[in-house]
Image 1 (cartoon, rainbow, N blue to C red):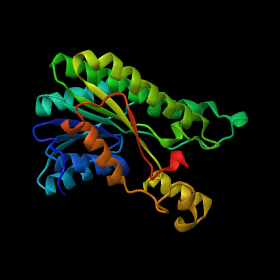
Image 2 (cartoon, one colour; image 1 turned 180 degrees about the vertical axis):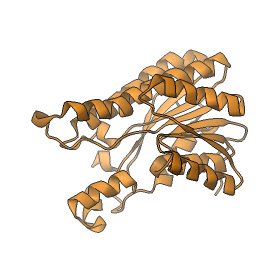
Image 3 (tube, one colour; image 1 turned 60 degrees about the vertical axis):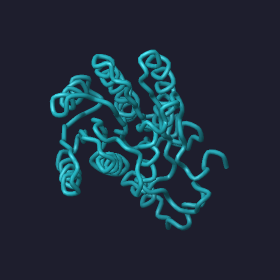
Length: 256
């Protein structure tokens, strides 16, 4: 595959132990980046690092709970300690959506989703942009939103609100960071074949071929690497005049 280049760049990918995060970390390493694989799951995160090293790439694992400021600060410091800088970040970490109708909203569930999916992105942006500015690096940050920010689903009030917030954070961060030539964009995945999606499909008890047409014009679920490819383009110099956008990777779902 002829990839956009991240040669010589240092990248952080949060939620990188599985799914879209793992695919992104591996693709970024293939494109030449040194990658900090950040996740709460050490075993799976270390496996992603081993996979990257096996293909000749450079990576390290850093256990990170993005809902905790000290963890996020330490994650950024680890990138600088290991590789000397921070050029690129993909803020992908998220937890599974809530499942209650609005009048049965569970406060603990709301706090759980907001803490990771919204506050976590905000904390990552805070420490990542500060480090890029400290080193005068014209970096690129990609936040992983969701098509639910544009076409909400029922029983997902906390998740939908959090992902709307990610789109808003992306726009504000792009405005704040533009004078420093740091670009901030987002990707909004649709129905992507991840453990999170698989759990939802299994819960419904439906076959993929019956369910997929309701969520995509291509009648199939997307692959994690297809989201990773969008993030790679936004992270690379090929998108050097792009900031503040949210790019859907959804096979046309939000426009149906």
